[in-house]
Length: 108
Image (cartoon, rainbow, N blue to C red; front, side, top):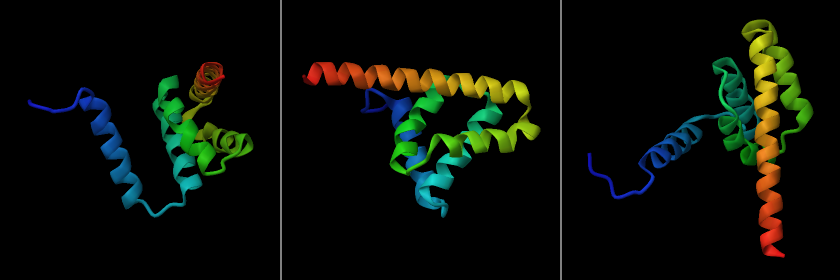
């Protein structure tokens, strides 16, 4: 397999995401909420949630909306998955904040 990219896996994931967004008719906020629900159902790691923080902020999602999704899917996916997701979301937010603080310090 020949590739001209240094990051073929990341490039493939990015292309898949762009294709999915282009083919989906959902508004941005609903798309992100749907993806968060899918991440919870799969017990995704913090890094998967981290990839959705920027788009969530850009679409205007609130913490209350994300919490509402967790409440709505809890009877389907179960308590363990929801609690795991809450922890992973908190870890992803902590990482995002740390990166933003570091970037701010470097820019100052």
